[in-house]
Image 1 (cartoon, rainbow, N blue to C red):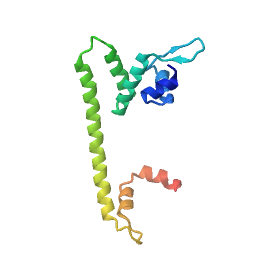
Image 2 (tube, helix red, strand yellow; image 1 turned 90 degrees about the vertical axis):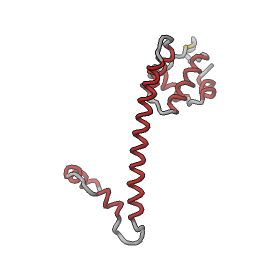
Image 3 (cartoon, rainbow, N blue to C red; image 1 turned 90 degrees about the horizontal axis):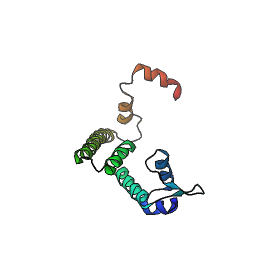
Length: 141
């Protein structure tokens, strides 16, 4: 299969497939003409990568997961640890986003949104500016 066929069947853009090859996640064969020739196992690996990335795993996590997938002597506990660490990171991100949402919701509620210039949103964004940051940004207006 050529890169267009594999892109269509895996659901990944050709640019992403080339990137995965560049960083060593996949290694398609090359024909005499230098064109990539993908095998079914390459397609399977690309689909694996696509699903892993859709779940938010990093490239390094994907590298680890592929190595574990290909290692028949792996222990499922190794895979579970990678997934648990990723889930912990997702939970942390969700908590951060919820905190941001709560803060922004309060600021929006506090802002009259009328013709007056006072704005609690801007006041909050401007408070507690370290002196170094304030003096550095004075010329950036």
